[in-house]
Amino acid sequence: MFRQTIRCWSLGVLLVLGGCSTAPTIESNYDHSANFAAYRTFGYFSPLGTDKAGYATLITQSLKDATRREMEARGYTYSEDNPDLLLNFNAKLAKQVEVSQIPAGPPAMGYYGYRSGFYGGWGGYYTNVDQYTEGTLNIDLVDAKRRQLVWEGVAVGRVTEKHRENREAAINTAVAEIFKKFPFRSTP
Image 1: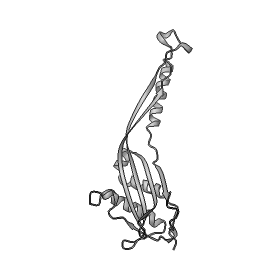
Image 2 (image 1 turned 90 degrees about the vertical axis):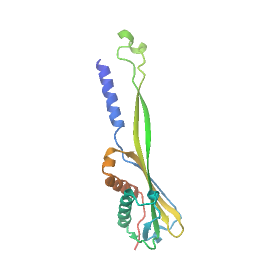
Image 3 (image 1 turned 120 degrees about the vertical axis):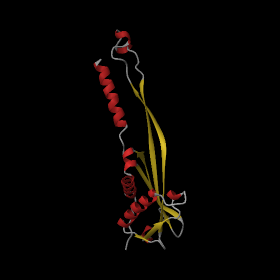
Image 4 (image 1 turned 180 degrees about the vertical axis):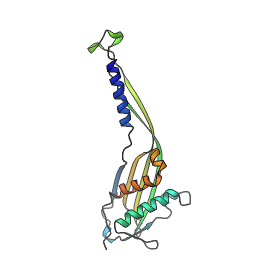
């Protein structure tokens, strides 16, 4: 009985740890032939990827605010008329299912309580099915003159209820994490 209690408690701890929210995975890449020292100004692509319905969304405004803050912190100047770089972003949500199996091990006393050790029965597996929402945010920087992508940053992670309740804070955090991978600064 004690071993079964320990086994159930251990399974509960594993399920709780497995369900903990983790930071998003961040990836970035850039065009090694691009002359980033020549870029001083930025603006926004038109239409933005988050405005596919033909109007500016609330998420678009939050993304504009967060990306503008990050670009200006790196010395770039916003220019609506003639920017060197154009920012674009895309965001999507997708339902995901994760199935994991944890070996249960043999029962504590074996079959009928008289076979244990090597002859014990096999306990099988505990199966855990986790359904969650995965969010992906892409931020692209495009050379305005060449109309070519020069840098991209991508964040992929679980979207929790806390994120949904405080969307603006979640967007600010994700954008800041993506821009940690942006290695360039504007030079005066």
